[in-house]
Each structure stands twice: as structure tokens, then as C-alpha cells.
Image (cartoon, rainbow, N blue to C red; front, side, top):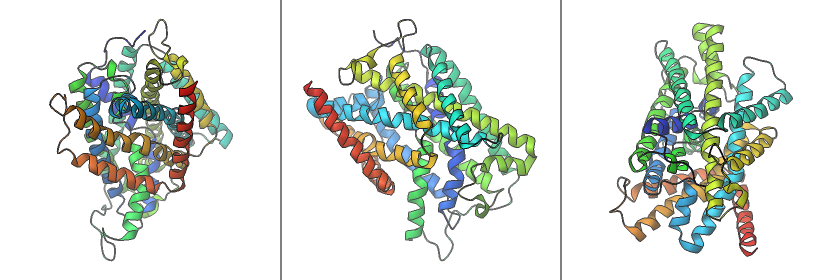
Length: 434
């Protein structure tokens, strides 16, 4: 049985991308990013993240429009790298996804539990219980037909945008401090300290932008994918980048960056409390928690299609190819990813999870995908592409350079990512011989 006919419109696709991008991430990493800069130039880490999303988004848009199938990168790798190389690369992507996707689930659920402590005093054990329960709730929400999920995504996306607009308008109408855009002596754009801060800060901001491609994982379920997939990607990136930049300026124009502190995980709630009192702080905290739930919902939705697509193709473990007999969604894949995510949510710290996510994905997904789009251009040309990236190959070159810079910035986590990839190579060859 195959996934049902396309049901998701451009509105649905954009909403799914946006609620994936804006989870708990920007609210908990904002004070972390500020803490990396001793000069107040933190806004450049968010600009760097937006540029990364834009150049990488062009690659996703070209591939997603040309190959709109469930699984996203899995199919891109399978087609781009040829018969032998494609089978290995696509397996490695699914292999790292089976570990990385639950880490993403864990990051959202851990962040949710940590932010909830603004409202309720929770011990570490109680926070773990909350994060685990959240994963179970999202699993139950996703155990249904795709058209229902599309409607839920639009509602959640509306909550995301309205909450961020409330924060932005509140900040801009109560500005007290200016935001540093240009370095003041002795600081400089060309100093080691500035780029060291950008490298550390961008690991967190790029994490906050991830999700602009979620629609590619649902390619076979999108109406008119040749047009709607690229549009949803660029609308998502432009809209969220603008909201992130404005939100940073709004919040840090009320709370000076020197007071933010890398450990103040309640920065936005404290911002609202300073402006409007405890009631507003409680309300914005509840809305941020709703956003975290929305993001986790979108993340699990997209990732559950990847092992399914690989299993249908005969390149992953067969049980993952099963679809629910009545509701027609990959329920085995959903169960497994949520189960592992549940375990991870009980074990890890948020900051380490964020860095580990990027370290695992950069080589196998982002850099390899950049190479893949070049291979496909050489093989098939660009005449029949529904969407052609602008100024090719400049976005590809920039993407590889940026991702390489970020990969090095992950430090020891880069080594862990390579070891997991090597383990995947071994499992692939063992599986291939059985």
C-alpha cells in the first residue's frame, strides 16, 4: 500500500515548515547566543543562521520540486549518487536519522519541560517525566490521517505567528536600549573573538532555523509539489528570519544584553513580566509551551516518513514499510521514533543535544546533499527542473563552506558524528550480505 493522494496545500505545507522551525528553540537559545558575545553583536549569529537557511533552502527547493516523494533526503541521495553509492548514502541518511530524529524529539521535549519550570517548580526527575509524557502526547496526536494533521498544523502555525507578533510589538513599543549592529572600537568584524562568538552562537541559531525543508519529507502528500514545495520553503525562511530578528531586537531593547546571561532560560517570560506584570508573563509562557508542542508535532510528522520510504525501497528494515490499515500512515516508523525519543528525553541535557543534532546531520545530509545536486545537474541538466536555484553553483559552494565551518565548530561532537556514520557503513555492508 502506498501513501494516499496529495492532500496538503501550500498553506498546509508552509504551516508545517514554520511550526517545525519555531519550537522551544529560539526562546531557550536566545540568552545562550547573547552570552557568547561580549560586545552585544549577537544579532549577527541570527543573520548568519538566516543566510545558512537561505542558501541551503535553494538546494532543498530544487531537489524537493524535482523529486517530490516521501523521505526527502533519502530519495535525493538514492538518485544522485548512482546505483551503488546511492544505496549506501541513502542508507546512511536513514541510519543517522534513526538516531538524530529522536534527539530532535528529545531537544523539544526537554526544552518544554525546562521552560515549564517558570510556572511550576519541578525537580529534575519531574522534568524528565514531563518531557517523556510530551512525547507520548505528540504520538497520540499524530496517530491519524494526514488531512486532519494539515488542519491542526494551520491552527498551530497561527498560534506561533500571533505569539511572536505580540512579543515583537510589545518590545518595539517599550524600547529603552539600542542594539549593536556595527562593532565599536576595539571590536571588529575581522577579529578572532567576533568569529569565535559567531561560530558558537550560530550552532544554536541554525538549530532554531532548521525545519524549512520539512515539506520535502512529505513530498508525495503535497499538492502541485513543483510549485508549492519551493514556495513553502522560501516563505518559511523569509517569514521566520524576519520574526527572529525582530524578536531579538524587541526583547533586547527592553532587557540590556549585559543582563541576559547565558543561563537565563526564561528571558522572554521575564521580558513580559517587566513590561506587563506576572499575568502577561504566565500567558506568554503558556503560548511558548504551545509553540514547543507544535514544533514537536511537525518534527515527528516529517521524520516518520523517512524510515518508511527507505523500507518501501528495500533499503531499510522491512517492518518500517508498514502502513496503518485504516488511517494509511507509517505507524511502525512513528512508534519506533517516538519510543527512542522518549528514552532520549529522559537521559540528555538540552545544550548537548542541540550540538549533537548538528554534528550528526552536517556531513551525511547537508554537505552530501549539496554534492548531490551538482551530480544531478551534470547527469540530467537543468532544462526540466520545476525550480532552478538562483546563481548556480554559488549557493552550493556557500552551503558547503558554511556547513563545514559549523561542523568544525561542534568540536568533539564532530568526532562522534563521524563514528556514528562509520558504524552505519559497517551495518550497511552486513545487512547487504545477509
